[in-house]
Length: 308
Image (cartoon, rainbow, N blue to C red; front, side):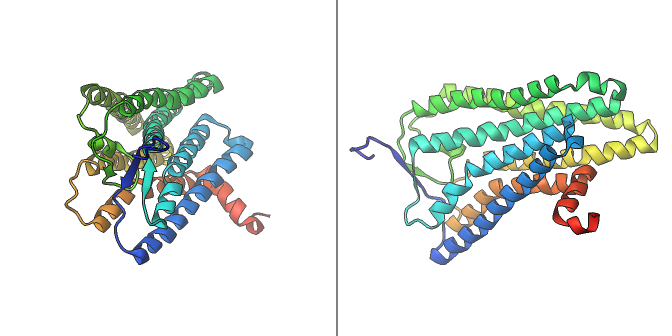
């Protein structure tokens, strides 16, 4: 506790290894963060610039990639500073803010993927009604819902955590996720109940909706012509791959935060990095390679001479 400023500081105890290892992690994570910003931003730029990509599916993809940029920017700059600092500390208010952004935009991912699943369902199963159903207003409502609902849900958890007394000021991690609950003197019943409700509303229900939607798509396309099945596979496969990737990492985040610190610090550091490492890079890779229209524009942007 800093008596002069009356600020509570948390020590991030998840950084392991000596100076050489920390320098390696710094340069490695700096390269990763640069790739995340560049790869996601390029695809968002392509969708923004090209009029033929101003369709619901591509707008939702752009929203998903913007989500990844904010999600990563919430973690990486502080992480990079910690790798080159002697002490890895963060004020409790900043820690709660990081927790808030991390879970708000992480939860938005599931809701955006749900909107994508619905868009694919209408496109493949109700093609004649697609432009009537998926209007700009509909897409705007989906985006507002995908970002506003998690923000409100996680805000309640953050406010409740801010009012809870701390008995430990050492966080066994490299950033502020649900490990902050271990710092609290008493596990709040209200936080636990609201956490379960948030998990159901923001993760489980959207995932069940996505599974139900894609099941309907596969049943209908299985009975259709080969061209319809091919179109369904081309547009649905990237969304499914992203969903599987993010679901695994979300489950990993929930479990790793509850693992006791019997692991060596370096091993625990590497385990924690998995949560923020793959997915923000996986999204642009999948959509850049698997979506033909986006892939075509990327090739034109990177190799303009061949397309003249």
